[in-house]
Image (cartoon, rainbow, N blue to C red; front, top):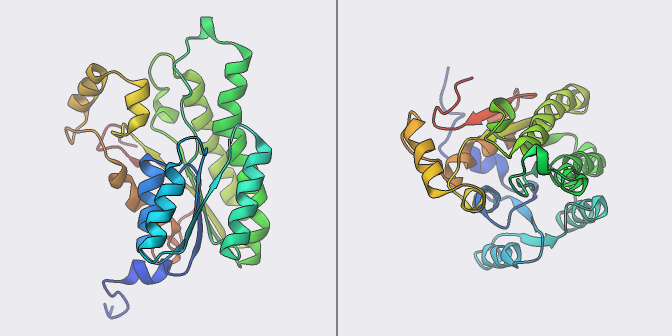
Length: 264
């Protein structure tokens, strides 16, 4: 087989001009991914809660570098905010080719004995309902594009159950994993591929908020690659699943990125 069809710029060419929305892109994995898409020539809509202004700052930085980028703010605990962000992104981008559902967090470590209904509602709304609503709202634009890609962010804890106090977060990510597989079958006739990336323990402010330095050090010691992951370690999996050329025959998959922490 000739290699002439695989220039070094194959991935960049494939994503150039693609219209991409990355939710939860004010920090961590989402911010690294938004910057990577922009660097490869995609048109990017970023999203953040609006509280820190980080998504707006990153969008301004990317725009100053020549990218087409804009930030949209919204509290994804509110389904109406999810719809507003998706609608704004589609309008700004002139359509949609790739939706990355990355918004979500643990909210807090909460043992079952202390769990209140309000906490349950918050975790479900942010980590579960927002993904469903975003997919539903983006569907007409993805269909109008003739197909595209949805990439959801789950977690290693969807498989392992996580550590004490993270039961609701882990369960919400397990829901998204199953939702991903089911939606992949449903949307395949529309040429919309649906996959997920499942990060392991990634050294971002997520674990700065929810894990102690001692816990993280013990976790790193158990990982075969002997270190925690970085946001940049995760980016390649999202780009692969977003690329029609590289991942065009991949759907319904959950790609584990964890340094060997879980070998599936």
